[in-house]
Image (cartoon, rainbow, N blue to C red; front, side, top):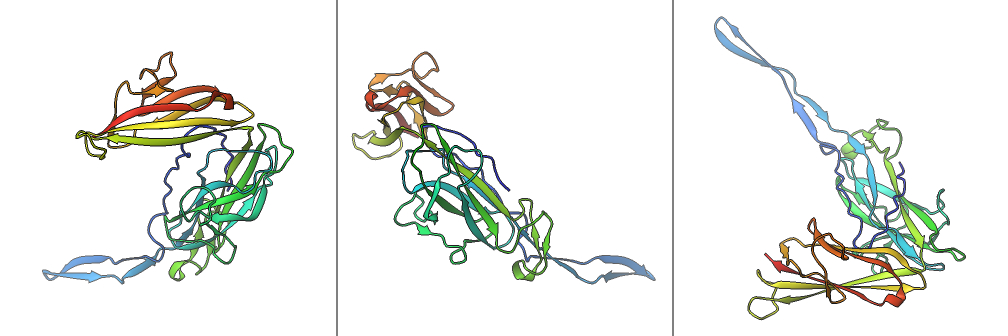
Length: 323
């Protein structure tokens, strides 16, 4: 099953994923019961039990693949640009899965070139390719996942030359059950956990999702820092301490980032300090009014407009108090 690419370009965090859960009772579980009939013989109560009937839960074969990366800005000739996916076993038994990349998909402007190797386990949880990540080799280190278990996977591509600003390139990750795939309800007799039957689930035992690269001659970097002042004149993050967050956004390259916007949810266990929002040292109001800033819905937002390298660093600051 394939998902259509979703084109979202934003400044901030990764696209949040929704939880996907395994299908019901664990494969191999015995469901046992018996019936009973009660009656009287000459005034004496008697009970008679049926045989004990045992039904063993079969294994559902299913998988979910979910893109975690936003659209990734790239430039012609870039190497080893990664897309992050989460692969989750949504069946009810432990299952091995194979992984595959496809970067020659219809509907885009260019085909990214899969690197060698092109699939990695995101072992360090960084969300991008790094030295500690393990390359995937089909048949050697296929992920084995218990029900509800997940693994983060990176697809890695090189970007060809000769592209123009705004070109899009797609790359797809597919995860496939090693036991088998097919139409929902297809049965692989005796091939499930503990010798149960394996039944193909709603997704067909395989699933795919697609990430997107965009050619951009401008990129935005964002760096966040914090300073703490506690009620006793120190710097310990105790209840009542103030945390001043500073975020610096810098445009680089020869192009312009159109309609750049900043958002930052206020972290749990803190309260936003009203009137503390600034942009490049100038105060911004908390209300969604004519100036660039606002605090609403539990988040700070700042409209940065069109940014290019000539604009220099854009510095946003605001304060929260630890509850």
